[in-house]
Image (cartoon, rainbow, N blue to C red; front, side):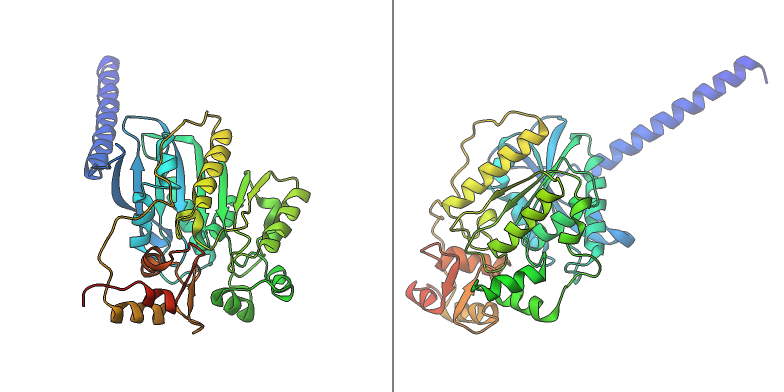
Amino acid sequence: MSTFSQNLRFAWLMLSAACGSLLATNVSFAQSDAWERQPDGSLSQTTEYEGVGGTKIAAYLRKPAGDGPFPVVVMIHGGGHSERGTHALGRMRSAPTGNFLAQGWVVYSIDFRPRSEFQPIEWEDAGRALATVKTLPFVDKTRIAMIGGSHGGHNTIRIAARYDLTCAVACAPPAINLDEVAKAKANGHKLSPALEKVLAQGNPTPGPTIFEEVDKIRCPLLLISGRNDWSSPPSVIEAYVEVLTKAGKEVETYLPENGPHGFYFGSPPIPETDIAAEKAVAFIAQRFQVPVKETNIPPAGRTQPSRTNPSSDRVAQVFARLDTNNDGEVDGQEADNPPGVRLMRTFDKNRDGIVTRAETKATAPTGR
């Protein structure tokens, strides 16, 4: 074969490979191109990512209109595995999800695998989610932040010690140091039933504690937690800040006097929810090195649209299931699930993050 023929054949093979690669990419994105337009103009879709061992894990993707590339905020809800909760967090129009979209950032809400709470495999799964979001053509791979609440907040800190993020926001991370939790209890801070159980059973995660991994933190942290949060005592957060500061890590806090568990994700929706979102936006924007845009996000504490309440029997059943310590109250930790969120939004009229049995009876349900 002549040199010209060899060169021509080589060029054809290279062109074919390039076209095949491009075609494969286009097919891949065409298959996932099931965008739904949201009222704010953003585009969204339910999706999934592949965790360790090929496990399919739910996710929800939402992006501004346009080609980008856009910075991205990865969001992790609280509680346990919940596809519904993952989608709900990604679909929110109010704080904090709406705030991130209004800044022109992509939101990628991810779930946990089932029955794996606080285990290292969850952090490895999240690493796979980070790798997945980086493959999206409209994502700025150099600007990736993460925010997590409760269980998701705990994991966010673990992930920030293992993967490269621009910055991270951890909201009310529970059980980050049980010695400090025990001190908080001894000093009179009320603990949620879930945290009491963890304290009695011991560290739920094998290996070093979050405090012991402080030197591994790779990015600036913002810690958000209310001083009246029973699942994340303020003294524990303050002790962690001290440890981070001594290790030379960059850390900021927002610790409002009123911030019941879940307020940072709008459960309950209170004025501090909006403040927390604004602080998260400012913190992330500074690390993204972009200006904060003025926006008009509906306040989290707005009046919810009227809707028919379930029957009194149904309310009683849900309340009994959520009231795990049988004290006649459902707090933010016990309500960290879709039925609990609905209960809070329907009956927590004074926005204190607690629904009592009396409050469920005072608001007369309709329908049977």
